[in-house]
Amino acid sequence: MTSLSDQDIYERMISAILDHRLPPGTKLVEDRLAEAFGVSRTRIRPVLVRLANEQVVTLTPNRGASIAQPSEQEAREVFEVRCMIEPTLVERFIASATTADIQTLTRCIRDEEAARAAGDMRRAIRLSGDFHLHIADHAGHDTLGRILRELVSRTSLILMTYSAPHHQAREDATACGCQEHRALLSAIKLRDAREAARLMREHLERLESQLSFSATPEAAPDLLELFGS
Image (cartoon, rainbow, N blue to C red; front, side, top):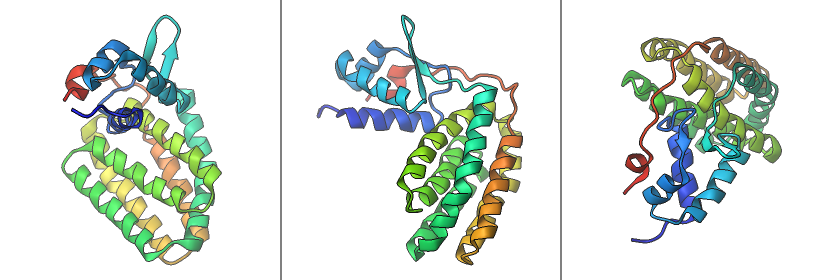
């Protein structure tokens, strides 16, 4: 079997985090991860450091690594910063958006709606993030794009930690989230930068308003079962 590269390990771990298969607070035991990926423990440590630098993993001396558990204050700060930068990003995106960009955003919405209709909230949250990241990645502002990529990763953890119960989240998000993305897409198609910026801000504010800071934590998975071949 071909050995995984550090990038392969990182991609599989970040996907598991963003797909919500690694709940906040999950302990990341290096020996267990090394066994699961079929590599030495020394190969795992740099990946954990990279994830910690992106603030999706917490490294604590003498206690090891765990998936970050954002506090209520951190959650509100993330949405505050997103409200500052995403209206600017969508305005810049509109100035250069291509037909292919519009098609990509349309596909993100369609796939998100299908995931929500199937009750797959974890995939829906990931796809919602992809919608925002495509706008950021094609807005022509590398610095804000990098900042948003980190914030979207942290938002995924926040939504996983503080989302309302899944049946309620499904109804709310289906009625609001996808409709808001469609409204945004309509403004983008019309090249209405001011309206798109307004809709983006309102969308993020609504997402924050739906957070429930009394949510029950999910059980941690077995790392070998999750990542083992």
